[in-house]
Length: 185
Image (cartoon, rainbow, N blue to C red):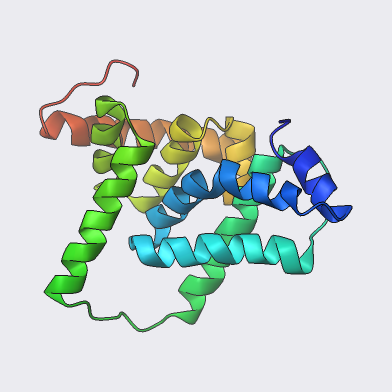
């Protein structure tokens, strides 16, 4: 598949299998990206679903100026921003619900991140500034380029490049505090 663009075109032409393929291909990564913002896997799942609902109902135009994945993650980010703006009240979660949420998050992480180092990196990402963790997640876990990441987070290329540098330094410090050194940083 050519990163979802052809499937989206097929969907727009009336083939429902196109949207099914898009959802299968991008749902897990998009949900974990959104979870970096909301820190609740259940809300992240709802917002991920809202992203696909928007594709189905609004059928936004994909111009091809970026990759399909970049475009899709931008839509997801916009939905997260709308959600954060609308939710001014912090919900209280019982200890039992928190346990279920944490178990669900752990299961999804293990399923998606099979490599033990990636799991450790992902956990360290949750402990650094959210701007840093989001940019590193997009680049290293979703394999976006700096240019694509800049498009998703609505920053210039240079701002994103600087953000990546600072994010790497922050992550490296966090990993060292936990006694782990990752050679690729």
